[in-house]
Image 1 (cartoon, helix red, strand yellow):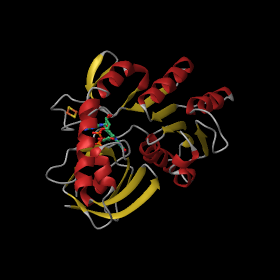
Image 2 (cartoon, helix red, strand yellow; image 1 turned 180 degrees about the vertical axis):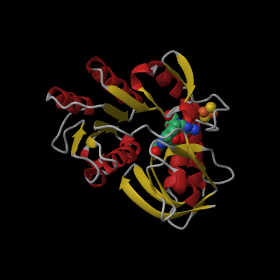
Image 3 (spheres, helix red, strand yellow; image 1 turned 135 degrees about the vertical axis):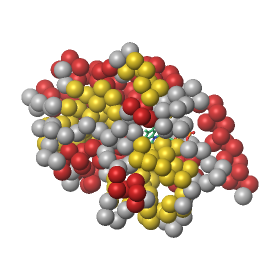
Image 4 (cartoon, helix red, strand yellow; image 1 turned 30 degrees about the horizontal axis):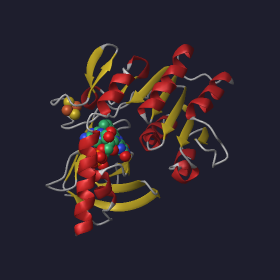
Length: 278
Ligand SMILES: Cc1cc2nc3c(=O)[nH]c(=O)nc-3n(C[C@H](O)[C@H](O)[C@H](O)COP(=O)(O)OP(=O)(O)OC[C@H]3O[C@@H](n4cnc5c(N)ncnc54)[C@H](O)[C@@H]3O)c2cc1C
Ligand code: FES
């Protein structure tokens, strides 16, 4: 069993849990993820390693409550335990040797981009971070990111934080001001990553994105997480989740990620019915 040591509510939809998992904390690197199961009857869900503390033996996960399992996870408290917590899985991000990088986080993607920004900054890269949210109330990790970058720009779709616009507007502004980036790392909704890639391609800026297709085993066996990259089939769980965004088939990936919407809705309705009956 894996004990929850700390719980924080980052915004009404997003929670942070610190888990006692020393073996994973010892090996984890930015870009990697874990697969957890809450209990015997639970489904397996992948979540990114948002942070780790090798000395304390802890791993931090940050998740948005979007369906049955993430809601159940969000209802747990410090002192509760998870049945399975497996990892680190996937390939670590290739972040060494960069002089200057822009890290982009869209919504919850900010939590996944955070360890990348932190690692780059700690290893001497000059890092500009741009994060984007629907509104001010959904902004997460602003103070944490500020400590791990040279410049932080936070945008909101509705302008409620005083900076209206999309992350792509802010990135375009920085590029056109003459800032030269060795790499852009963009993590967030698929549509956001697609538009960041469309922006950076004509400038020839290498752009890495993190794919989050449906994953089942997380070990390359089931084929559920396949994505097309440069015309080849790749498995996000073992070949990724980071890929060269200019080579990713986003339209196919978006179609595949919507395949189980009916089943996910039914599962959520069933869980809500059970909770009401309890
Ligand atoms: C490598 C990777 C890293 C991720 N990291 C994070 C993270 O740090 N924080 C976070 O909030 N979310 C993350 N996700 C997405 C997270 O796994 C899903 O939100 C979660 O599985 C939803 O489960 P649910 O039962 O609550 O919702 P459901 O109602 O089952 O699904 C809601 C949506 O979540 C996605 N999803 C559902 N099941 C899976 C699955 N087995 N694998 C992948 N996606 C699924 C689908 O897009 C689906 O439409 C990550 C996904 C991947 C693949
Ligand atoms: S999750 Fe099964 S092959 Fe990747």
